[in-house]
Image (cartoon, rainbow, N blue to C red):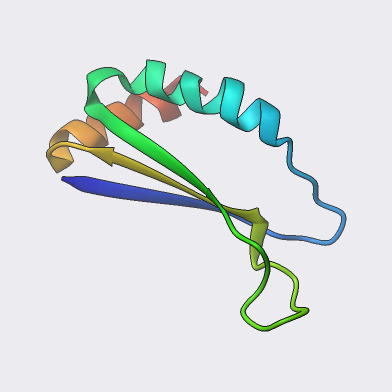
Length: 84
């Protein structure tokens, strides 16, 4: 099984729309990858490495996508990238 992690760097003034991401973006990714994407998880963290530190990634988001063999994952990701 292949696990692909996607993280968005946190920059000053950046914002993140959780409702859009969970309700629209991830279902679109699942639809485009089809059966190549077995399941996905989206984690929301609570801050940086030390108390009071800003989060390294926006908004403490880690998207993890799981698929079958590498050939299947590469093919499905290639389809998504070429359609952008």
